[in-house]
Length: 274
Image 1 (cartoon, rainbow, N blue to C red):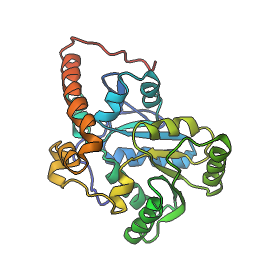
Image 2 (image 1 turned 30 degrees about the horizontal axis):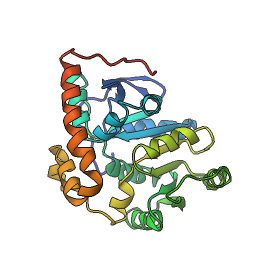
Image 3 (image 1 turned 180 degrees about the vertical axis):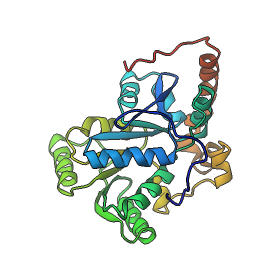
């Protein structure tokens, strides 16, 4: 049991080794999970040395996938797509998966770090602005003194050439990491994980975006009551209006309308991974 405690609802049915049922949300297959199940699945992947990646997605990721077939495919072939925002939790429950609860990126990072300390899992932090992954690792070590940090790296804000990319792959592989945390923002981090999944030997890649800045102390998180009520978007919009206004003021209403049509049976989204 982690500091997040046992979940009061029954766990979803696991359909295979590390596979779990998923809810079709506008064609994106959102895993019917809660935090204890996610930790159980990740532990299994590491024990079996399976190579998987996790998309921690909210409304933004789902809406970005509407006009981008490649991004939708990346989500639907991920080891898990966790419901990062309350809207995805609510839609999953309306589609029959009542046991689903939010698996928020920053909370997932803390839960995995806590779970990993007695097991000796090694963590690599890839992403964020210069100095951010190092600050993040230092803050997490303060919180979890036995945390094993395999390495950190902040890539430049430009496309890497092939030599640079292969040097990063070698750096991560040489670190013998078990979990690679990727903080490049959506959809860049999802594309990076999918493109590098077969090259990296670490069993688990997890894209967590703003969790780097939150836990490094570079940005403020919304109060818990706003997170639980689905109002975190309002807090983030107020703190970063120029960067996030389009994401929330355009994507959110479009999401509500599209989901309403899907739930009413007025529009069908193919359930296949294509």
